[in-house]
Image (cartoon, rainbow, N blue to C red; front, top):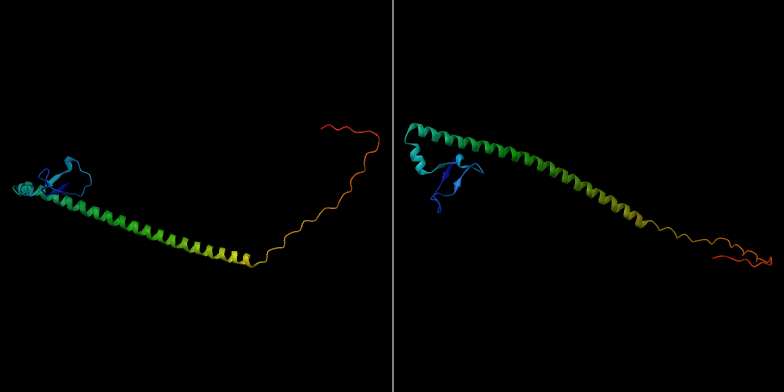
Length: 139
């Protein structure tokens, strides 16, 4: 892939503009003024330079189309998510309103009177043993 190269401080070359995020040494063709001068020396070199440049333009156009397609897909997803969020918010608000109505109704209803405990009938104590024997009980 051809890249535009401007002089920098470290290697005599500058910041490179490239379409590829990661390139190997084989992928790099530096488009400097020297390269352009050399490319115009013969028709064959000029044809190669032209092919490199056309390749860059085609790659750029493919990347633009891909980005536009992805952007449209993301926008569609975002709109769908926004609609779902709006539906959920409306449902939440409706449920909050219903809950408030139920709570208000319960607040207006009189509280039931507390249930009073009734005592059971008293059973009389059993008669005292009087058979003359003292029963012994074990613990």
